[in-house]
Image 1 (cartoon, rainbow, N blue to C red):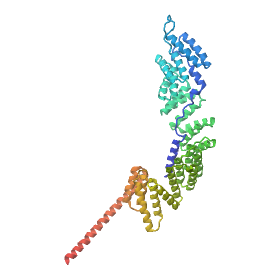
Image 2 (cartoon, rainbow, N blue to C red):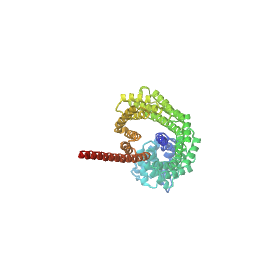
Image 3 (tube, rainbow, N blue to C red):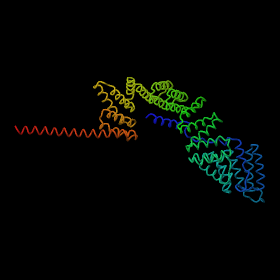
Image 4 (cartoon, rainbow, N blue to C red):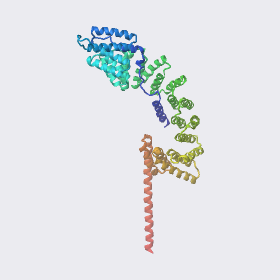
Length: 504
């Protein structure tokens, strides 16, 4: 029973860990000086997919390029705005107004974007596309803009349009793959990333993106191998180790996943959630001492002690039959917490200590802890449930019949009260039903077991309750038969008495 529970906890830790399947974005393009220069100065127009420029516009573009190369973007913007205004509304009354080329509007959009004036840039790009719908470069740069705003749906549409117009830049394919990945379209993402990788095989971003698409498609062996090549080249990149860990766990290669997390721990890169996952993996592999070390490292790593998460780790150690390790861990949690525990956390910690003492067979300590808890908070649902379980355990071990009956009466009372408390209704109904079954009171226990199933459906419990139901039916039939036999016997005795009276 414990294996499935721990597997669930491994998945839970995976969800809270950096290992979880989060999609890692490509590097920030807009911090890349080469990209910025290419972006702002992108105006080498292709006649079929980008608009023509007039000779005068060509001369302005040459001047702008000189300013771009010197990083004088503000001057470039002023020069371009002045040119556009003079072209569309000449100050010379003898000069006829002319329509500006979409190319110039596009370049102005680039300048706006470089100045982080994204709304103006967006309007400029859209205007350039309105005037020239096949303006490939405008679609590309508008896609970049939408990526910077995290509007990936719109970015994807413009990248798709650019590709249909013949765009072959690996960055476009890579970002298109990223958009597909976010849209949970891993096959399309894989194709886009493979194209980006083909055109730019040295890029870490495209390899990592490809690995993520493979993980989404459960092509885990291929993803593991690809991430391995990246790790060889970038051994200090934590995300690569964690992504490979995820792929390994998907293949049930748990010890290899644990090795990855151990490497991160030795490098000082593992976070609290990673170390908790490592502890869960060691418990799954039957290594409680290594698990204890990992759990201890997790609580030492955390800037703020997560008492709830730490107590879950203690429960795992205890539930797997290692109360000594669990006790050692809880002592460290208590030491780190000091006087900062809230009353709720204090009760939760005491309840974990109750479980540890019970597993260790120290029923006297169990009783002492529960008495203290009951005195502090007699209406606490978990405390009432644990008291019921404690008296049930005492009844099991008691040889004196009178004391045993007393313990059973206490157990039933506490469990009946707990069964009406929503927080513990499932556990209380299950425990009370099992108590009745153990006492061969099947008809009394069946309603509690059926209520437990209603609260938490479970195939194993269904099978158990089906057996109890058959036993309850047999018990009911026997009781009805015995009642009928008693009634018949009493009627017969009454008839004999009446016959004797009549004969007198």
